[in-house]
Amino acid sequence: MTYGTDALGALADPTRREIFERIAERPQAVGELAAGLPVSRPAVSQHLKVLKEAGLVRDQAVGNRRVYRLDPHGLEELRTYLESFWSRALASFQAVVEQANPQEEQ
Image (cartoon, rainbow, N blue to C red):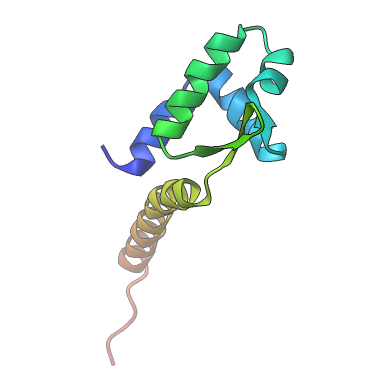
């Protein structure tokens, strides 16, 4: 799998997506994230592990806590993957328009 598809798989889970969106607002530790979710702290840790393996978040030790933030490199990989669909869609649209309206030859 590519980084893009790994990231999509990681974000397929609604709880994981919620965690990702909260980290996008600001870096947070596991305890902060768990406080606002209907899952246990160990479950949040497991979700963070999946997000980290997918390259979407990274962590940093701050005292005795680990603070999670978005990983710009992984986000760029995901963005590139998604933009490839946009580019292909635009190219396909252009081809259809050009076939429907061929310019007259001079």
